[in-house]
Every structure is written in C-alpha cells, then in structure tokens.
Length: 95
Image (cartoon, rainbow, N blue to C red):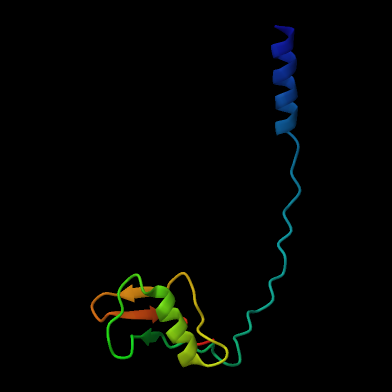
C-alpha cells in the first residue's frame, strides 16, 4: 500500500511541472529554382524495327546505350517492356 501511495504522489508531482515553451525555428522563404528542371524524354527502343520480346531486356539496354552515345541510357527501376508495341521503354531517357 505504501508503494502505491508513493507512486501516485510521484506521478502527481510530475504533472504539476510546467513545460518550457517550444522554440519555433525561423524558416527562410523558399527560393524557386531559376531554371525549371528538364523532364527527361522517355526512350523507346525496338529491335531494328522489329518488336522485342519481354526477355530481351539486356539486348534492348545495349541498343539504347548505342543510341544514346557515350553516356548511355539512364536506366532505372521504372524501365519496362511495352507488349502492345514490342518496345522497351526507358523513362529516364539518355544520360
């Protein structure tokens, strides 16, 4: 019983303590970018005019690298096969 009484008094004392006000940091005004970022043009690759198959991703990547020049294609997790056209689509375009 004494332990419960001591615990309740301790908890009650903690509730009486005033908390310090939170300091709100000054937020500098947002500066818009001077030049808007260019949206990359998706690169669609076919097999010399013939459709690729879904499992030809490595071949499509090498064709895309050849088309983009020395910097190659900007490959990402969003690269996909378009079954309607038989093209591999690289949404990030050339690097």
